[in-house]
Image (cartoon, rainbow, N blue to C red):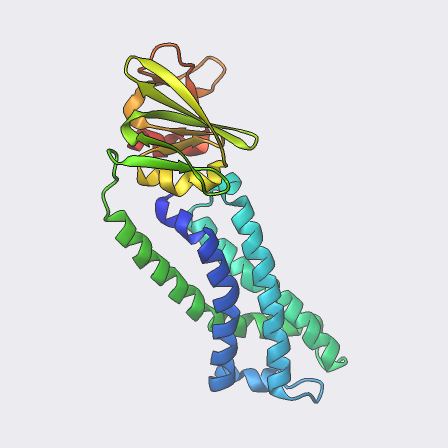
Length: 267
């Protein structure tokens, strides 16, 4: 997955989408009433503002569910930019389906459910495109500025445990690879001619941003690899792609299919 797309699917981006998309859409609709939405949603003899409030609460709930699901599945799915765009469209469709259900129930039979799906979906697409585009542009600019920063592969890496207590400090160039095992991360590093291991109580997710900043790359759900310690990449008879390391006595590191391109780019 590209670095910029990773940022788009990160925790802060997820929270931003859940809060900003419905709020921006609600304020925009109340102020401007675009696309004849007031007439289209004149239902049930209820005040326009009340109907819009309910519909955008439905949008808030839909986006919260779908965006949280995307965040949880981001590593397994590894969506492309096109896949991410399709997911965003799907979020609007899901919200429209639930919004049309509310409108149908309030309208008491004056229009069918599918008629309201068309009304709600067409107008919601026209309104929601603004906050989606704005958030995407802001995150693109942010990640572009991060991309211009050089990877610091010589600085010391400070490892903290799950309680944020400093446990281990090492030159990033000495790190060979990291491997996760349940609630621990094994840090394999070079110490002169020998290789050693330090066991840290933490998670790969907590260390991911720091590892990328220091030049390591994720090659498997359980591994981070330092490309400078890779001797070669080969495919085993079983079909598994592995990285052989320069250090003697270390087993080859598996490389998952979805990470192969990212690893080879850094070699």
